[in-house]
Amino acid sequence: MSGKTTDPAAPKRRRTPLILFLIVLMLPIGGVLIHAVVPPFATILMVQRAAQGHGMDYRWRSLNDISPRLVEGVIAAEDARFCSHMGFDVEAIEKALDANARGGKVRGGSTISQQTAKNVFLWPSRDWIRKGLEAGYTVLIEAVWGKRRIMEVYLNVAEWAPGVYGAEAAARHWYGKSARDLNPREAARLAAILPSPRRYKAASPGPYVRRRASRIQAAMGTVRGEGLAACVTR
Image (tube, rainbow, N blue to C red; front, side):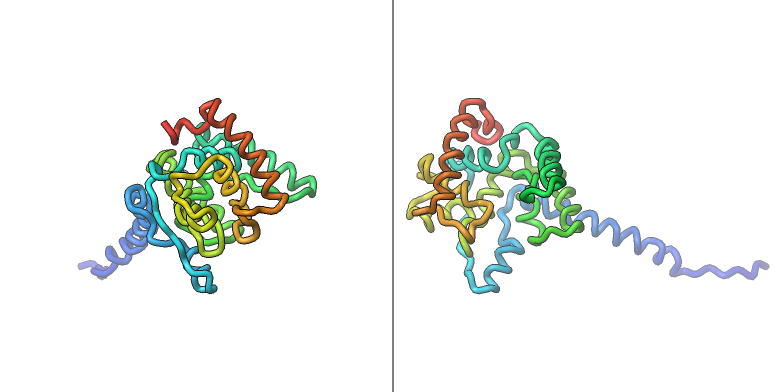
């Protein structure tokens, strides 16, 4: 007769790490699947800003209810190769790394897809953990959402003033009109303040925003003429 005894709890203990791993794996996939059709209720940034006393003006609008000029503006300003890359602009990343290595002004190489992944699912910081998660979410949303949905979500959750999120709230805040009625100059000015929406103003802007918006508006013609927004505005 064998002296060995069988621990009935052993198989359960062996399954526990696997179950936990599957749960951790499915959480981001589930979030991406849900937001492929359901607008985000709020983002971590929105909650943080609200806690700081900025309030939260967040008005979701379908991409069909947002001016195509704003789509062209943000592509011109933020990610000219949005329609051709798969989430990461290698050329922009290389240029950013080169500029940073030379000790010049620190540049980023984030695409609209990466910014959307960060804005919707993650927290605002520059730590490597967040950057790694951002890369994973970027791959997922590119695969599951597609370009039109990525742009739709981006335009709806981006911050355009303290406590003001999305194209509709931004258009109302700065110009007193709907996002669908933005003209090229207004769209260019909104795109121009995206990097620092708490510092700059889209209405009655200062010299820097006026110059930047003028360059963006000129580039919007190129975006339109060369079909650089075709994956969104088709």
